[in-house]
Image (cartoon, rainbow, N blue to C red; front, side, top):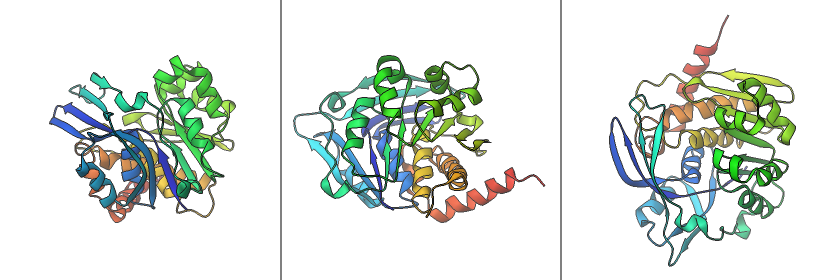
Length: 301
């Protein structure tokens, strides 16, 4: 099956207790796409400015991403983000944000991409997510991400978007904020009342919750010893999930549970180095080896 992602591409500067990575490739669509390429072919739609380095485009094509949907807009500048993580890596401060091209008109889905089977609407304004969804003919599965900014400032648009997607991936604080529930399990269950057929609530180092009409699945995070840069972990998680689902003949509860483990493992690899360094250089074999080890950890006789 074909997999299409739409979302942000950016130039990041990241500081963690392990050092600083200036002007590296980032963005929700990029982390998702690179992670997903270890399972399937990926199509990317996004927009950048004329300052976007050619080396970044090459990194994506070398990873196997089809960037025919990447618009390089003359006279515009690429989205930039700068952040600093705390000593325990659980919190981060945004030092600078320059929306630049993200404040302009959204990109267009190429006609050759309109037949995509699975569509991931990475984090951006929910109205733009619906616009992107309308340009894909009849996807087998549509999943979106969101953030606290849109829950606060564009709630009506977000609720409208949730009516036209099959799945939602969101972190625990955002799930509670969106639903008004104080408990993560209750919040996860309440998300299904908003439209999606399934929802995944990410809990960072504490794992993830999958809720479907048939029940709830809770798994821990993969025990990673060397956390260097948590940036992009959530998008890599989604990339691992949906990339794996592209390999499945049927997307049912069993497939979703298996994809949850792939997403968790893929994210655990991403955070072991700055930017995309670790995840782009891994392999499907390494991912599956870690999946087997993780599954053994979870087995209780």
